[in-house]
Structures are given as structure tokens and as C-alpha cells.
Length: 522
Ligand code: NOJ
Image (cartoon, rainbow, N blue to C red; front, side):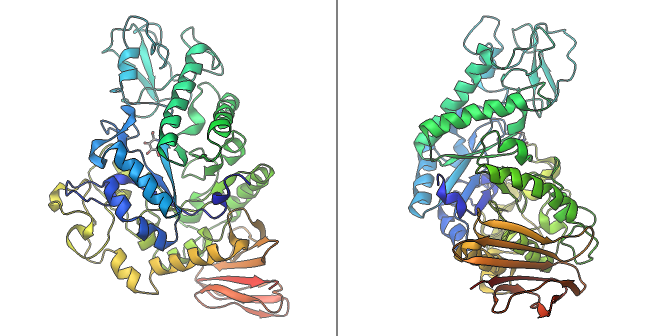
């Protein structure tokens, strides 16, 4: 099977600004990541998603690319990034870069040339109205216009922040004279330009891309059919030229993204997946108060899973990311262990957000850094040890990119590594169990056995032909519970937290706050 490594991939997301600073400038760098590759591997992760590391004015933490072909000097050089790929590959690891195909920085040369009055190669690279004064009504999936400051008599559509002009992939439904159909030469040339960017980094050694706002490229495309066909074209390009490359989409609708040719899609904190019900609502399913609901989530998940299984696509459930509040804001250490038992026993490709493995806190009330706003609290420096700046940087503390968690009790890697009962050690153990048991691998089978609305426990099976079945029984609630379930004789418990389950006849008693994986058919 193509992309065989995805079957065992376990990703670690790195926000490069905050991971490890080796030159004492207060901000992380490539060398820091290289030095921590063994740490990531020891945790059990064998793949990395690196947030944007390209030249940028950093109005949106690098999601405003100024030069697609050059890394930001604060992280190192293109050569350093190439070395990172090499070092990762030497350890059997894979690295995905963050591709931001929907918009650039307004500081990008492409945009400056596009704003010139005289026609040039970049005239159609962005979406411009045909008159600076034209009444620019909102276009679906966009956030406004840049008006003024350029010779060109028009306003440019923007995607996210005002400094992020939208690249022109055209419109599915054209309802203004300045809008181009998605298959016109201008939009088609933008596609080719983005393929060149991909070629450049794939040739340098990256293994593929996490794709930013993948579902939003073609405008006025409410059912996303044109955007889906655009990505099918990108997938064809990869299959022909870089068959080993993979793409994971920030889309959150696997029914669409996987049909579009993405190898994987994330469930997100927005969109229709009900991902938030599990970890980040007033009553999360994984809270011991036991008032949460996983059934709505699973209703949607199962529908998407059936569609994903028809192709070769994978659904990714992340522990968090740089855009959402850290999972530890809602769950304490014991609850987190059970949440990770779920994350690391589900099918698809798990993603761990840096620092979640030690329960790093969401820092409330921080001043916004690089367009982070409330997201800044999830982007603080990694806490490695008990030394100054938690071992992240030798810079003076007031020069750090984002202040470090000031709590004296803040978690750190060194302390948790020494404690076999820590969150870090539990996650490491879970990753090891997942790696050792093929029934738990990313593409192995999945069957939901018990999941009722606002009720506990959650029970499912993972299985494959080689190994048989692993029964996963999870009860995050603070109450013991009993359900009808027959566990065949001879089962071997391969992971347990919070107490083992007790089978009697056709019933099973499940302790409060527990997670158990039982290998049967041995
Ligand atoms: C999604 C990214 O994850 C987020 O951080 C960014 O601000 C927006 N897309 C805009 O690119």
C-alpha cells in the first residue's frame, strides 16, 4: 500500500517559535528541533507537523507568507531545514511542512506586483475588484478587502486578517464582472505556482504538507465541489511526481477532504464534527463529572469513517493545536490520561500538540503575540526542565517570544520522565502499546460497541487479521458502571488505568475513571 508509514504514524505538532531556542534570541529554531528529535521519538511520535517556518512579517505567526521559497531567518536557513529533514529521516521519522496556499502576506512580492497598474505575471494572482470604489459586498469564506495603497484601480479580497490577501483560485459561481471562473487562465496559473512551491520543498526532503484552510480556496463555492476538484488535481500531481508525499487538510469535513484526495483530514474545533464535545465544552465527555456526551460525536464520526474507508483516507483526532485552548484547561491530569487512552486507541492518525504530553497549561490573559489573540495562551514556550526559562532558552526571561508559564508547579519534561505515573509516561506507554499491537494501528478495523447519549462507558473494538481484536473500554466518569457485554475467556489486558474491569457472565463492571485495552483471540 502506498504511504505505508501512515499506518503507524503518530504525529507531534511543533510551533517552531516556542519549542527550543539554541541561540539565546528568545525564539525557537531548527537546531532546537533537531536536538529534540530523540525526545519526540522517545515519547513515541515518529512524524512531525511543523507550523509555518517561512519568511514572513509575522502578522499571523507565519500564516502570512512573504516568500514561499525561503525560511524565516530567525529559525535558521534553508540548509538548516534540509538538515532537519535529513536528521529526521535518519531516525525513521517524517516531516510535514505547513503549506498556506490560500493567501500570502501583503508584503509578498507577488502581491506588490499584482497591485501594479501595468499588466504583469502577477496581475491575476490575487482577487481584485475592477474599481477601487466598487461596493465590495462580502464574499463567502472571506473577511473583507484591502482598499488603497496600490496603483491598481481595485480592492483586493482578503482571507483572514487584513494583511492576508486571498490568492486567486477563481470562483465557482461568478456574480461580479471582476470574478474569474475557477478554470480560467489566472486561477489555473495560481495552482501551478503553488505546485512549484510544493516541488521546491519536496525536492529539499520534506514528506508532505499540512494544508491551511484547504476547503476555502475557490470562492462562491458553497458546496465546495470546485474546491474538491481543485485538490483532486493537486493529488494527481503528487501521485505522478511525488508518490510518497502526503497531505493532511485543515478542513474538518472528511467526507469532502478525503474525496478531494487528501490522505488525512483533521477534526477541528469548528465545523460539523462535534470534536469539542469530547474535551472542550462546559461538560466534556472526558470530565469525571460524567455529564458529557460522545454519542453525537460518534454519530458523525461513523458516517465519515464509512466514507473514509471506501477510499484510503484517514481521520485525525488531535489532542489540540495552536488555534485552540489547551486540552488541560478543561481536564486534569487523571482525566487527561483517559482522554489520551482514547486518542491513542482510535483509528486514524493521532496528533499530539507539543506540550500536551506533560499537560502544559493554557495561559490566560496573555498579551497577543503575532496575531495570536486568545490563541497566544496555547503557544507558550515548551517546558523542558526546572532550570531558567524551563530550559527553553538562555535569553533573559523578558525577551522570550511569549512569556513562560509563571506557575512554580508548572509541569516539565524532566520531572515527568522520571515518574512512571506521570502523564508523559502514560502517553509513552500508550504509544508503545499502539505501536506493538497491529490491531491498534491507524488503518486497522474499528467497531463501536457501546456509546449511548449522555452515558458512560464508551466501548469499541479495534481489530486486524494478524492479531485479532483489542477491546477498548473507557469510563471517564467518576461513577462505577455496569453494562451487558461478554468478554471472551483468555483476554490479556495490554493497558490499564484506574482499575481493571470485572466480567461476570454477560455483564462487565467498569471502575470509575478507568481505561482498559484487552487483547482477545490470542
Ligand atoms: C488556520 C491556522 O491554523 C491559523 O493559525 C491561521 O491563523 C489561519 N488558518 C489563517 O491562515
